[in-house]
Image 1 (cartoon, rainbow, N blue to C red):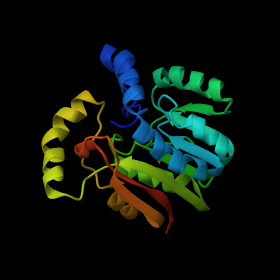
Image 2: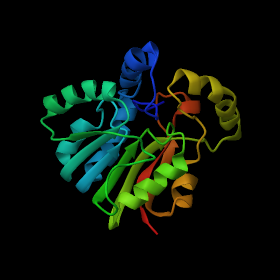
Image 3: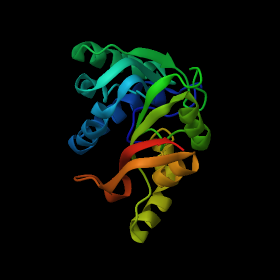
Image 4: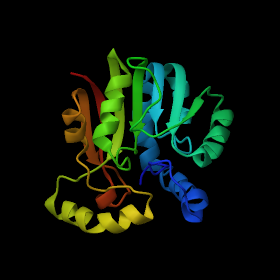
Length: 217
């Protein structure tokens, strides 16, 4: 996955607990992906909930935002051990919340911004999670996202479909071929802005990115 966790609070094996978070921290910290993060994170404002804070790769970019209270949600405390160091290094105040994206322990209509980057690929019940994003947002709140997903080219999509079962096993449940705009739209959001492209220096099967801002219909 191009994020730093695999979703569901379950018993983890040694690879999942100690090895995978560090692999993903390195993979997700590549320069092209970091540039994508830099495009979206500073757009957050007010009370902000980051879904899948992982090892904290978005944290450095909050300094340039209008964020108020900042909550980092992730199902695994192992990720937070790395993220907390990043938080301290960047002097960013973030409250950690250990929970799944499908069941967010936050009251209805209580956050201004939901930020999700390289996480929607991994959540098992993504439709339920998007419904949760909608539930916790205020009426005028916004969903800010940056995700990799299904490619528009048929040949690349075929490779995504072929590789997905193996990739999913090795990369903590990540799916290469989810249709991100369709999932967000079907979840009851409308787009204020939607951009997409293959990001540079990244294999095409994992490098088609969608990013933008959506609001509740």
